[in-house]
Amino acid sequence: MGQQPRELTPNASPWHRWGYELRETRKARGMSLQGLSELALCDKAHLGRFERAERPVPRAIALTLDDKLNAGGALVRGWDRANEDQPSATATHGTSGAGARSHEAKARSHEAKPMSALATSTFGQAGSDGDDTDTVVVPCRRPNGRIFFVPVPRRTVLASAVAGFAAMAVPAPVTPSNALSAGMKSPAEHYTQLRRVMIQTDNLIGPRHVLPAIQQHLATLAARRRTARGIDGARLLELETRYEELAGWLAQDIGDDRAAYGHTARALDASHMTGDHALTAYILGRKAQLAVDTGHAADALGLAAAARRTARPGSRLEVIAVMHQAHAHAALGDEADAFRDYDTALALLDAADDDGAWGSWLDVPYIHTTRARSYAALGRYDQAADGFQSALAALPATYRRDRGVYLARAARAHAGAGDHARAAETGLQAVGIAAETGSARIIGQLDKLDQTLSAAPREPGVAEFRAALDRIVLHLA
Image (tube, rainbow, N blue to C red; front, side, top):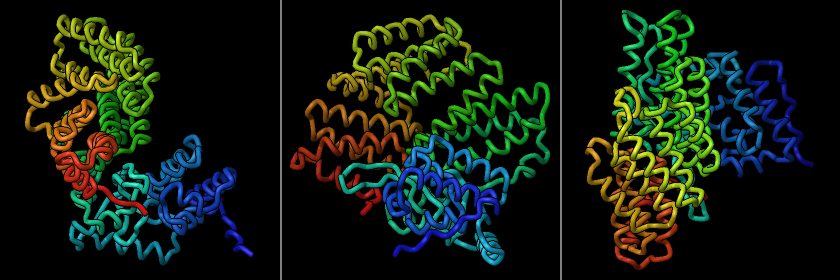
């Protein structure tokens, strides 16, 4: 006779309520703890402790469980409510008094530990050194050979010797909000400068170092904005919107698409609060880009059209919207519509205002690079490869992550054109940057390249490329 599940006490604390909701959702889906463990790639014993509120629940795990149980965001919203109702819960919820004291002692001892012994969760919340429920989203190869981004206990990453990712698990320094506030004459300017630095840092070393710091600053910025009034409050709200958009970009680049959608949706909501139509148009364009990147081209087409309607005619934001619309058409296989829109984007850019505020990065080579992506989506691989090679030649050396993305896409184009040796050579260069930055944009392309090259194992360089890629991903049994 099987052991009866322990009775839950949902009224004991916010986290007991969350655990009760998790168990009820799981039971409603007719799923056992073992079944959910296999589906969510999370230890069965840990899931049981989450339900009983005996262990801290990383938000990344809550996101995964919500997804695997088709909870429609209910578990994530419950996690957010529990976290708000009990601010210290990330350190102590669901523990006995002795357990809480033990956890606090470990937290105090962090300063004495070497940095290599510490890691952060996907959302920048570092737990105790002994808590293997803290997670990092990393690329893992499943038994079917495909690479997926999944939340993995940080201790697994640190013990794996996977190139680059253990170092990327080290948390960014956390600055208390009161320290940030002290002596700050212009908080808006302070956060504007911080954001510029974060963008530059991201392209050099990748998002895993940057995202926890962005989220810490975002929380402090939101707190300041709620107490500000007048012009200061409006400026801080605009900055909060931009921080949310940037966090969405970084979350996508570590492979956490659900978090990317969440940050970008909050950015869109905040943009409407600002009343700044240009900001709303920009976020709509970003949502279109995210949608097409995650396989929802029809949604991307509608979002791009909305971005164009919202943008001021003759602005660079209108050009950006048309460019996203063009690639969405290509992803849907509408070749004529795609290249008509690219011609329109080039003509609009030639006549666009140079307002200096939006799309400063947008130029003719950038549009041609996006067109190269569309060539690849339409199966015109020779033209795609030529486009990416031109993009690589024009890319500044400081755009390290972007170089990896272009290399990976160029490699896939070469493979599509049948030049497997050149694809392997180009892909091998991208592997090195993927290991440095941890970019899901790069690794996602390399996974698809790996699948293509697996059919040509004896071609020059193919075995070397595949072995190098294999070394930078975890392997799941």
